[in-house]
Image 1 (cartoon, helix red, strand yellow):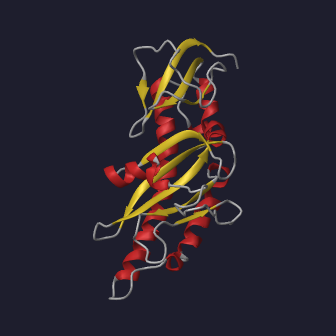
Image 2 (cartoon, one colour):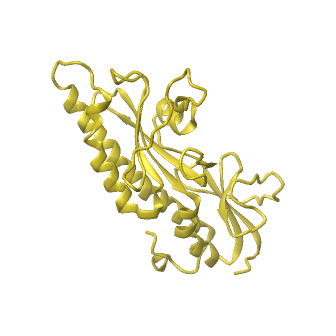
Image 3 (cartoon, helix red, strand yellow):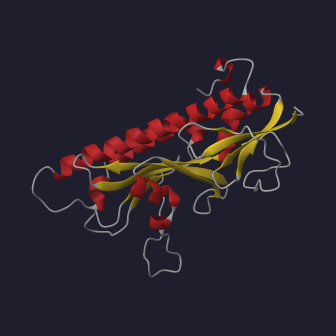
Length: 243
């Protein structure tokens, strides 16, 4: 869907929202592939009476995750699965998260460490766990990997019996979102910004409102347009863009 030549013309604010939703659907489809691989593996590991799965049993997921990273190129800065508390016997917390160079991300998951990374408190984990739905958190600075603004997309993953196993997720750089969507935004011909549910700017065509900035001082029009099935909205600002 990232071929902007396929977009309808002329651009409308509704068509911009549809373009954002289609990009998100592309990302979530990839996460579904990863999540389905985890469910299938888990069901196979637990179909016979034996000890509960260990982190090493998740090794077959690597091929699927790396395959999705390669398929998406620059769109993904990292992807993988993040496991629920206590579902593995050898580690209370565990993530199989891979980077585009096929290196596994290693984070400090020991609660006694000053560098403890407590993913169980983060929205991209808690919303899928508690509400059973997909989510996206950000933009936020990815201090663990790239030191750039990313949005973290996630979906819940369960076993066939309904046990919550964790999430399948991906870090998507804002720069990659801009590359996919900016030509379409510029074709709209008016200043417009894409914001999250907290009123933070993700991207747009107004240089006054940069990624991560708050929109509290923005004169918000009455007719904002939500992005379907996303905690994001589009805000047209009314004047012509300078492109």
